Image (cartoon, rainbow over all chains, first blue to last red; front, side, top):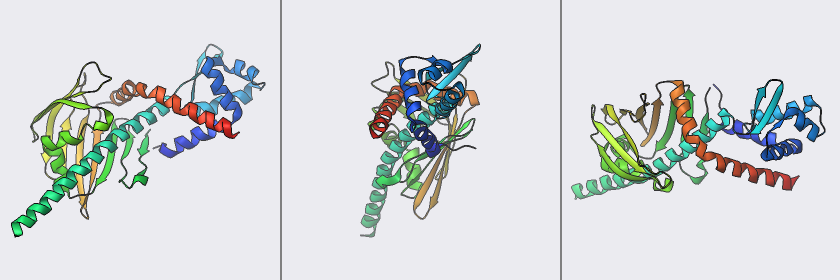
Length: 121
Length: 172
């Protein structure tokens, strides 16, 4: 079982800590690009760029798709990142529900205390 | 594979956690400050339930709600949201209602059988641990629920990412 609530954030932060990788994200924000094109653009070897893209992919910031011999990169949330986002939204919904529930339980407790008092009087 | 999310309890509120514990299961937990019989009451009395189930802070409003909360009883809840053209209906049946410890209901609004929700209430030292367990009929059903509802969060995500990149670049 993998837990990635905080570890996923760590991965995202460490992915963004590198200037080249931030450049790659900006570049992909303008349009999809192959790893070769990115390597050229950033004056790097293919192997070096593959590593950077791999880190961004793991962080769920980039998705890649291989068509024939060309691997195209695009900005996007990986399924894992998508799921993390959904779960966080869902958690926020439940947190809001429980906050409202707290108030109702508090009122019920108060009512019981009041009823108890009036009975003993 | 499992994903988890925990709240920041810095605000002094107990943490609400959500975890995907398996391909088909989601588990929500939260401790509520009060005895189980009162927390259960807030779940099992329709007039109380509808006061908290659709939080106003999410812009959701209850359009109609009917529930016969006992084993074998039915419920139907219609909710509205400014972003939705049509109200959304949720309905199903209570498979088990056992005060003050357990409730089980079906979610039948989906096309091909929905999740089964089991809520348990465990009291300890005057507080109650509420565990909401949702069992989907298949991995595809849970994946589908996630995929269909999460796309709305994308622009927000990218906006947050933009801000993060800007602040990181400013530091560099």
